[in-house]
Length: 205
Image (cartoon, rainbow, N blue to C red; front, side, top):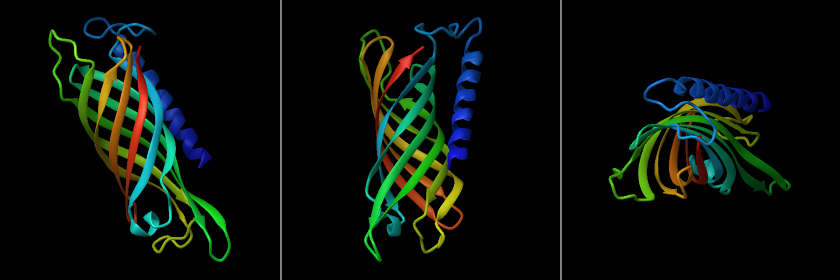
């Protein structure tokens, strides 16, 4: 698990460096400077996660919580590309044959297109709802035996994510972001579905 988290962290950092280099060019995009007005935003916040499928896991594991880091590149005023680093854990208490505490751990890197539903005009509107969808690489881990995984689940799989949310501009550089996202993960022997509610902030570089 630690090795996977380290790989995810290095990949996210590399993505940020590559993005900053790509966006710092003459013409079109503003030069990359902290506190400036580029097309790049960084953010993060907290999320609450619940399992939808399979029923075997949903019956045992409670809703959990985690953190999410966000790199957002605004292609134009109404479309953005989001790269998210997502870490969460769902707790479980087992009572037979004795009390034990287990968890369903999830780490993921996702990429999604964010389509904003309000076109800005001369009238400034701080609230902007959006829809988003994309792909992700998900690493799932649990020592809890399942019917398809008698020795527990430890694997990385591809998945999709669909959702929507609302951005609320707190100023020219800071934005409050709330979203609800559905994740479907295509494991080797089972399909896993989760829903997460996220609340965080974005800061424009």
